[in-house]
Image (cartoon, rainbow, N blue to C red; front, top):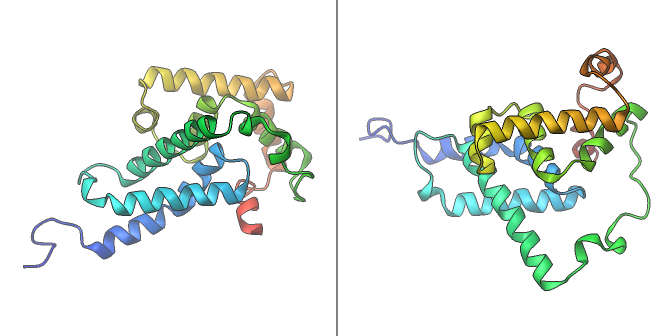
Length: 193
């Protein structure tokens, strides 16, 4: 009997699904890691853990949400370990780049990016999941381990924080200025590597 008759996905189908999720995983990793190489390391570790524990994946659930949860947990475990092993390392000035990477983003898109980076991590991850990756409120709540109402609140505060940092009073101003952004400005960094 084939795996299709047993309603089990074939290994090649799961591999394709995981490979198809790599761009979304990279985008989500950038909410946690400001350095692109660190984001790639987080994606790699997430994929290794996901593939190593594929037997624990529950059929009928979304693979994307499962991998995002693994990534989030991996990131926070790394932070806790780093804090225990080397106090002050996360705020160490020597770990920051000495010069800004050269990019041809418009001044306004850089400002939006900076505004997003200044958000608290829990707001930044919700904004990335819902606003950029198009994940539902319910899935985001599951990934972040909180209630849907909390997700909505964090998203609202994240949007307000970005607007405040930009000195804008309404989202309409940003929508009108959207024509100045490159449609792929979130992937520009990844494409240059």
